[in-house]
Amino acid sequence: MPRPRVSIEDQEAIEEIWKGDKKLSAEKIRTQFKTDHGEVGAPSGRWISEHLRPLRLKEQNSQEETAVKPWDQWGNDPEKIRTFFAVHRVATNVCNKYAIDDFLGLTARQNNWVEKLRPFFNLSDYFETAWLLDFAIGFADDEKFARDMGRRFTPRVVATNLLAKWQWRSGEWPQAKQQTTPAPWEMMDEDVEQRIAIVLGYKPPVYRPPKEPPVEQATQTLEELRPQGLPIDEDHASLGMDYTNPEEKEVEDDDQL
Image (cartoon, rainbow, N blue to C red):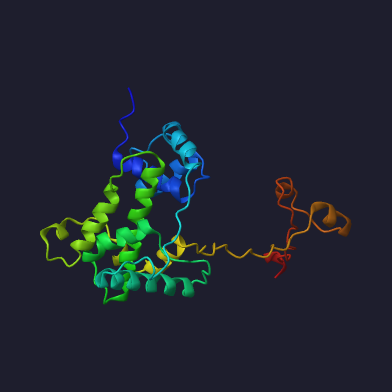
C-alpha cells in the first residue's frame, strides 16, 4: 500500500526545521518533526531526503539581502516614517539587550512586510510593536525562501493562521473560540524579544547539566580481602559482589543459661 500523500502543512513544517539548521540530516529532521507534531503521518526519512535535495542545491545560490539605511530610505510619508522608526527602535533595543553589535537595519523586504502588517498592531504599545517586527521578519523570510527556491510565494498556512489568532485574540470575534493551541504571546515562557534576537544573530546559551563527582569505590576487591584473612561471602563474590560477611555474635545455648 503506498504511503499517504504528505500534506502541505507537513511539507512546510519539514522545510521550517531545515531552514532552522540546514546542516541537519533527513533523519534528524524527521526526529524533530515527530517531536513537534507526533509520529502519526510523519514523512519517512527517504521522502524528506528526496524533497530537500533540490532545495539544498538551490540554497547554495542564495544571497543575503542588505539592510536599508534608517531614515534615508524610509520615504517621505509621515505615517510610514513613524512605523519604521517604532519598529527600528524595538530592533535596536533588542540588540542592546542581547549584545548584538552588527545590526545595521532591516532589509527592504522586511520593511515592506512591516508596512503591510501595520494595521494589525498598536504602535503605542512596545510589545505589540515587537510582535509586528516578529511577524514581519517571519513573512519576509518566507517570501525570500520562496524566491530562492524558484517558487511563487504564498504565505505559509501556519503563518496566516497565527496572524488570524492575533486578529482574534480579544475573543470578541466568533473565530476566537476555534483556537486549539496557545499562541506564542499567550505562553508565559515566550519572550518576543528573544525570538527577534535569535533571528538577528543571538545564540542562546546551551544548558549542560553539571557533571556529578565520581562515586568512590566503597567495597574492596576479593584479591584485596583474601590476604587480610577476613571471611568472604564466596557466593556473592562469584557474582562480582565482593564484600565480607559481618561477624555474628555467638548465642549461648539455652541449657547454659
